[in-house]
Length: 333
Ligand SMILES: [Zn+2]
View 1 (cartoon, rainbow, N blue to C red):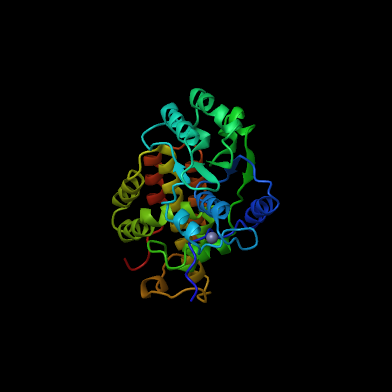
View 2 (view 1 turned 90 degrees about the vertical axis):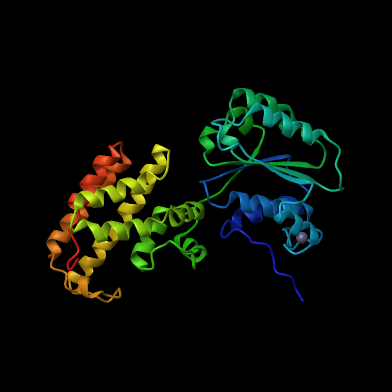
């Protein structure tokens, strides 16, 4: 009876093949830098790679996912595989944590075989934390592999970058994203709205997960239920949704996803108004759509303009007001 395998990242076959090839040829480097968009799967692949470096029965140069070594690595309990990350309340990777990493790396190994340290947020090192790291990164102890992760390669300090073998992670295809998100709660059921969010996540499952957890779909429904009677109340719904997060860029991203859903819902109504209701299940209210196709097209155009303003530096409160005022009320509400 075969055991189930540990969860693997979807996509990134080229990265696996390349790392697996280095492993098979015995050409594993002492330090890698995995670079690619946040939430794209770098951590999962780093875990698979660490498991492959320890695996008792590698399959085609990669982790089997079933042996005791693989399972302990995946569960995060292997003493030879450690993961470090910048504390959430710190802007930079703290130099104290770097010293801890280097001290621990210099300790004697408990179990034979390779040791792997995964270091997240490699794009958040400052000069002093980078300097504290350089010597260990350049000459790791024998049988030691560092895997650094960075969301933004451009922000990795050159002193770090030059000591690592870079590995690029491409955004996932929309089809892979849709497959990963199958069964997730909090995403729209309507295929067009769902596809709009998947596109907005730009190939990052982590980003899509954040949208699902943010409950953007619920906010949009609340907006639609309110906008006919009271556009200003509807605007407040958006403002509140946006202010659930603290950082300005996150707020902008939240508003982008709300706008994408609102725009998708207008496109649905346009389909109906044009008499092409082959795409979706219709509610009586939507079927009784009074808005003409022309006014819907105009509204979609206005929302597109507003999206550009959100991408730029528009005041988010004013943008929410403008969205609520531009949005044609659904018929029958
Ligand atoms: Zn294994």
